[in-house]
Image (tube, rainbow over all chains, first blue to last red; front, top):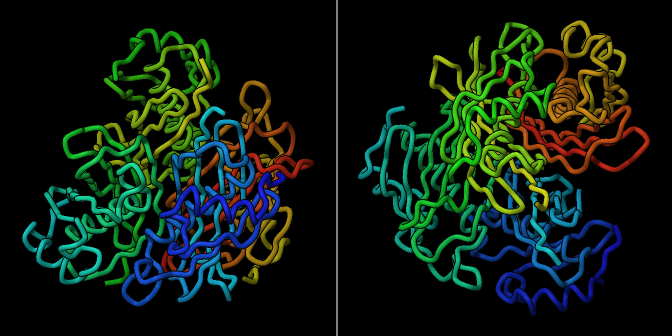
Length: 141
Length: 141
Length: 141
Length: 141
């Protein structure tokens, strides 16, 4: 699965199209694009944390969802808007403090449905702390 | 499954124990307790919305998670802290504007695991817009 | 959601169209059709059991899948073939011996996707032993 | 995550302990053990197939469940019996004819819960046809 967008194209497009979710204050950046995958980073801000300083469940959900979405966008091009229909998310261990890294890998990229696996770990720690598989509905092009 | 806490006890406890998640600014209130279930309401604020004014995915996740958590708390008492281990969440249709109502029903309340189903709808509209099933690990008491 | 097929029509169609899965030896029968739901029964045979005489995991999966499929068929008519794309299934307690009853309720019946919730219990015991939510892709008609 | 059993030990133990599920007629064999993972093969027999000759949904569920179970057993030793509590399974494309290969990888192996990811592909075809993530409850030792 060859990407259809470059890292630079994604980094330009995303803050324009999704200023709230992917703007400079979002803490989110696209770190890498690969064949069938993207890597995103989240520099957690105060609003992402729960008491104790670790990232909250809804923030992990958001990071998984955005990463999966960007993986699809990178591989079908900036045309269509995929819609999340299902996510099954497992919280494995408490996430470490600091930046989180999410790797989103396309399991399927069909005409109507995409299925994406996401593994989230601390930046300096390979251990997966959260794992998700999400399904997206792709509107007719 | 008989609840072990009254509505009043929950309404007192939750903002004390979880001031960020359940405080006066959270938009969340416990509306009802039943046998094996609770009903919660979310009055969505600006930060809960996506462009267009509907509630965002992470907010629906948060509402499902909090409602399921409160259902467990209401039925085992205010002692132990359950931890979300898995949630499978389905986004069925775009949520309506305005207050959302989440009904969380215990499917299982075991010694070590609880499984809770959550259906979310608009306050004046019975249609389920989001449905989730979540598993919680209950620490040894 | 009004059904588009009667109980009798379903009982005639299913064994013809799916002789292996729904024939006289399958142990499966459609017990009821409601608005947005069906009830199916499984009289478990030797091959459905695990040691100890309770129904096996793959059999519970099969019962959930068939029930959800029949719920869709009953409400869109006998034309199109829905394909299971995802199932999240929770095994709550060991199922009782004897006949199992599965109630499948449509959470969503869209043009392209259907989402169905299934609760399985023993025939003479209301307790849900297994709960599943499944997504089906509906081919263009 | 170091395995605690050898391939030979597993191949001796499994048919003894689970003669129905893992006996010579089951079509299942353990092909490899790795750090935190096992690979299993299923030589599909008539009873595993749906019309058309491809493996049925319940068979894919069974293969995912058995592979995940064996991955846990191989890493905690042949003492305790893990119980499946949840599986989220995605059916990506129709499986090819012939032998299927399942790779089960431990995402978490805690004291009370294990979470295992399983990818199933055709033996001569790297494409994942089915992907599952399952949670197991591990009884106190």
